[in-house]
Image (cartoon, rainbow, N blue to C red; front, side, top):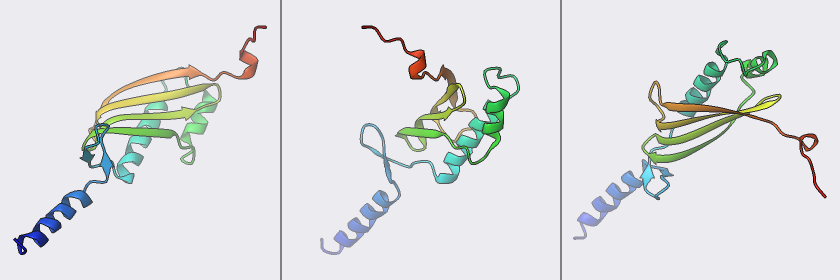
Length: 128
């Protein structure tokens, strides 16, 4: 029994060490690497720069072309390199949010985009 304990401990450490993220259910999973997150962000940026998207103004296109203009993003894992990703850019007049679902490393994960106007206090009507 004493001879099996170190082997058991080593195999347990290997299993735990390879997985550093948790799913929403608390199960361990492999997260996206920094390069894979960057690929997802840059692919999203490239899609937003498509000239057919009319809700992106020329000024917004100029900002999106700047590689230093990074979005906010949140990834919730449901499995190994799979889950739901939300990538959000705050542009001049709109907030563009792109949601991905499924295998986040595939060439074409399921995606949807929403464009929401930015509201300020000047847009708000207060009642007495």
